[in-house]
Image (cartoon, rainbow over all chains, first blue to last red; front, side, top):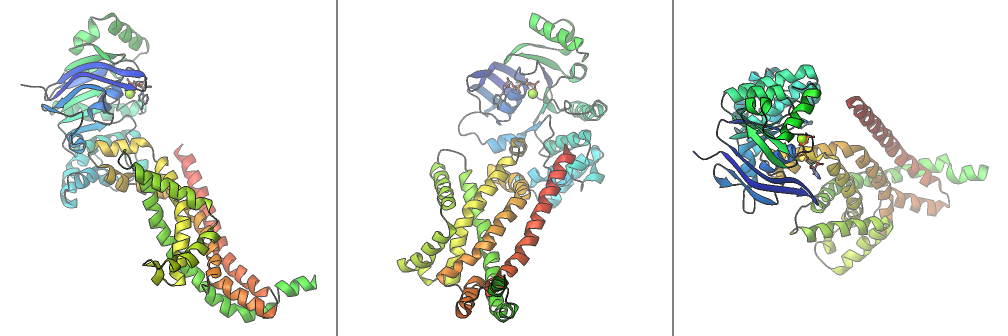
Length: 248
Length: 234
Ligand SMILES: Nc1ncnc2c1ncn2[C@@H]1O[C@H](COP(=O)(O)OP(=O)(O)OP(=O)(O)O)[C@@H](O)[C@H]1O
Ligand SMILES: [Mg+2]
């Protein structure tokens, strides 16, 4: 079976600063892959490139076998199939929770209001926020906002979800409720690529962990192997720093 | 002192001139409302043109930038003269058919469209790019992103400066008397000329102030409220 997502030789620079320096990565359907690496190693940039929020300079990105970078690609269609959740939630502050979740199904998929609400309702009920559907984002806690952001992406029924440090902006006591949702999604078979600083979470949830260093995937493998017996000295050094900072 | 009082504050003359001045001032008010609506639309068009992405849209961008610079550089009085006296003489439809009132609306829209376009642009640019990223990542086109995500937030933020420009617009409606629109200033002028006394102007001044001061207070109130909100949000 061919991979759901396939990156080969992806390069990306900002000005003269190379950020991605030849990334090769494959994700099978239902696979959960965690992306770890130091701050500035290019995790967010990689996710943004897969979602075509940033154009890439070289290489190819394929989703379901079809090239999704370069000329002639329908970016809006691609983005409907790939959901992304950001560190800073990025909910639309001038819209109610329900409108946040139904906007894209209605305006990008052309669904009727009733259909979009019917799709949003079980999602919001699942995260326990259907009662807050008329509230505006600034009335929600950070954890609630991030759960709405996840559900907003899910409402497009994407084939692939990209999560960019979805708990980094949260108070410690709110982290668990967000990770719980991600765990459930993984259990249901959602294909996910997750950039995270939460090493114990990565160890717990990932089928595979990729260590990104200075714009390259230096090492990848099952979490047990990466976390207990890293092959590359730089991976080992990174994990030592993480342990010293008390995050594993 | 008495001479000054008599020249400006002859209450009998103010009372006598007021009905005519008020009738003229009604024209100022409708002119203000009609021109404001036109300005809101025209300025939005300019601001959107100016923000168009891509190389193909470069001529439109340059047009918008050139337009905005040009009309912000011209005194409103000059534009009113040019439009009011110049345009009808070209014989070009639809200008040759327009009433003075309509020409005044055109002139004010041309001038204030440039100012308000810049206000819109500041508002659009103040919306954080992550909002655009979130919207595009959900598969919304750039047009729909502008319409549903960016513009509503931008407009909310620029309401106070928008009101400021409208106070200016409202005052400048007094300029269109020079092309013969029978607005308040024109009527006050005619009355003053016949009596060699400026009191009718004072009556008109009071009319303007009664409208603009509450508007200015309201604008300040909105600005303060916004500031408090920003502070509260951290
Ligand atoms: N829009 C941009 N313009 C210029 N440089 C950028 C831009 N976005 C990211 N960079 C740079 O690219 C590098 C990688 O950034 P990126 O955000 O992908 O790292 P990261 O691995 O996600 O880091 P963190 O763990 O802090 O989120 C950094 O050096 C950053 O300064
Ligand atoms: Mg990042």
